[in-house]
Image 1: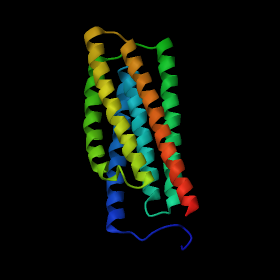
Image 2 (image 1 turned 90 degrees about the vertical axis):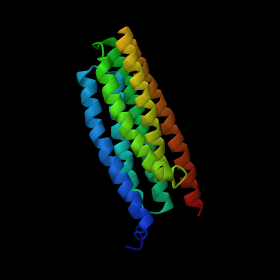
Image 3 (image 1 turned 45 degrees about the vertical axis):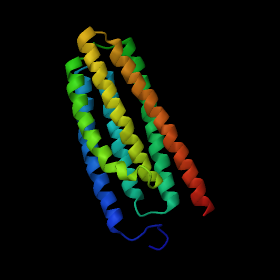
Image 4 (image 1 turned 180 degrees about the horizontal axis):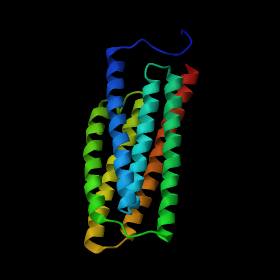
Length: 204
């Protein structure tokens, strides 16, 4: 198909697909683990982090579709990832508001253990994606997603320890809201990058 904007498979694109497939699988598993644990442990922070994992998995899937495609396709793929992340951030803030009105105290130990596991997974994925941090726009977006996850994991661990020590439920809500705001900021970074790349692709 000459007009599909596709390029032949190369060792580089094959390696990109392998890396993104592994990242997609790991994030899919951690989405289930964190979201389920957040529901059981009444933790807004864990639920927010789990949904962030789902957004990452979607972003990796979009990036997989973009490999070997035209520059415009890659820019549009990054744009889709940014929009998804923006929607997720807003949803997290809405959930924080809902749980602030009605919700049970979170389980600090569950928060710490599950977030620590997520941190280990994200650290491994970020290491795999580090080679693409200055690469093409769709791959840079995946690196930004994962960097955001890492920071969110650390925030959940800190809030979980604080909840264990103080029993103050609001700390979990504060971290959940913080993750939501940070996710929205990262979304705007991806969208800005995608707009610049799309403009460059349209000029070429």
